Figure 1 (cartoon, each protein chain N blue to C red):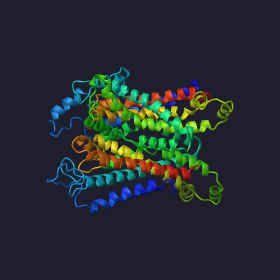
Figure 2 (figure 1 turned 180 degrees about the vertical axis):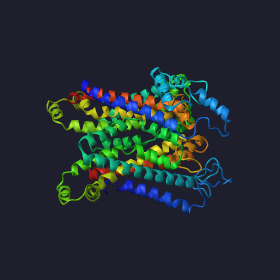
Figure 3 (figure 1 turned 45 degrees about the vertical axis):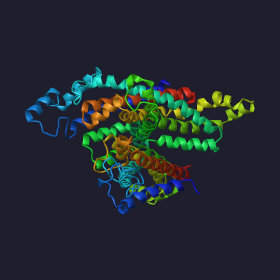
Figure 4 (figure 1 turned 90 degrees about the vertical axis):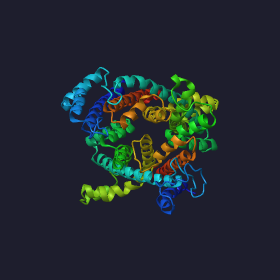
Length: 263
Length: 306
């Protein structure tokens, strides 16, 4: 089996379960079953048991995974858009503009990201849109570097020169000729950005600064589980295991793809 | 060497200035404030509070006062911890956070380098595969998952170690937080050390050393390790950032009185001066560690010093 297939299958499985699972379960993630508070795993009606107020752990974990993945996907999309645009402009223009743009990226690399995101959360209030916009806005740096490198590599290839000689405008060259050739590497790094974003999102939610109740996410579930672990260890173990599995699988898949596309 | 330092300072100082300026302005344009309670204050009280904290002055004057205070090590009053200045909180919390981060680095460096070296001895061998998978997983283990898990196992189930608290710096209280904090850094260092060593061990001077009949251990320690650690050195800056960020979570999980925990409380309560001070302080620390990384870089690989 090719490297990267198994992790990708695991990611797909988790995503599918998170999307379809809540439709199939009798309990919604916020429904309270008063007859079963802190039920242990394998209780009748609750496969993984319930939490401190009698909410089904499986339903909550699936719903939390869905929110985490949605936030991560959106934030990684923001990072992809900013990073690709920034890298393409820097790589294409070259010279002073390139130098200045990459200096900015270097300077931002040296900043404490998490603190900047938290600063943004404090300033603009804790809304879910801002969570992913904020995370996306600080996770684009690697993408910008990678895309710039690719543009520099492609810049003087004959097909680009031919397009220029044929009178194609800059925007046409960028969208028609550069972008399709960048896509593979950009997607590999997108896959590597997603676990980073998942980590940031659950970090913020764990601290109470990210996704807010009554919505839930893996970070919130781990937080609630940690509060209650002395009497109901499953509430910590289940979301924790899903989170770590997701992070490892996404990273392995991204690395495998990157190694195949970028020598 | 000096040229590199000067060039780095030329980027670091404007970055620092931009951080201070931007975060100050962001905090002031923010909608809502620390005096927004569930029950609205009457306008006179509100105005008096704003006046007492100087929030009714023109923005430029507020900035001037803040910078002046900053130059004297005064971060202003904390808006939530009313009896303390932010400076007091920093003086209380920073030593705890730095102890935690320093110990974690002291654990992560030797652990990571040893694991990386063991893996690089036989690239592709089973030790390599197992160690690198472990390193990948360790790198991705969020400290807010490992922290509670360690507490569950060693404090609640086995009862060997205390659940939380600082205990006046008692090593038994520090063991679990340091492990939770060190694991991701150790994993990242192991991967970098392995990559560096695998490249170095394939080079001509190592082949020569082998041909002269030196033992593998001696080759590793005397000939390969120093140049192989260059990628590890360049990771010192990001590692410092990771440890400071991780410390925020670990301090929250283990209820340690560090600066990170004050920061989270400040962020939840919109305590502007406190959040501002921590961001500025940590940005400064991380820039400092990047400079240290550059110095290390030059020492490990004299060609880079120029």
